[in-house]
Image: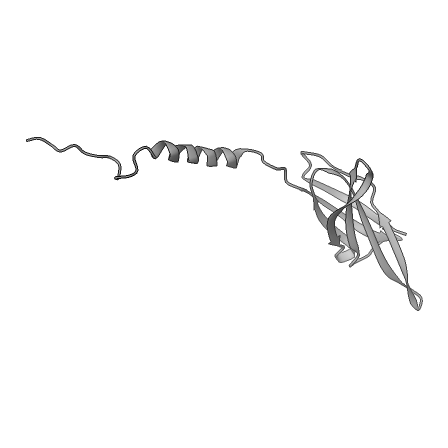
Length: 133
């Protein structure tokens, strides 16, 4: 008795196994590679005369070749003036501006942080203070 030849693959799938293995390897390698770095968490406080000020608009500038340039990153201070921003690698300045009660009216105050340097391995920076004057 002669056995008919057997096929291990379905019709039309011949030669696809190497392609499947190559795609699987590519997915594993891409998942393990560092890719783009994660932004660092930058936490701090907006203060006026030592007191934290809530609901202050924050704007972030990046240091470029021509000086400080707006980065388009904004935020708002929360409870007791605290804030948390996520910034990529670079040198940053956090600016704040607010109107505070002053007698029967209000007074405009503004301030900026010292430069904040986020390195390639930086994950978190704490205690950045933006003093309003």
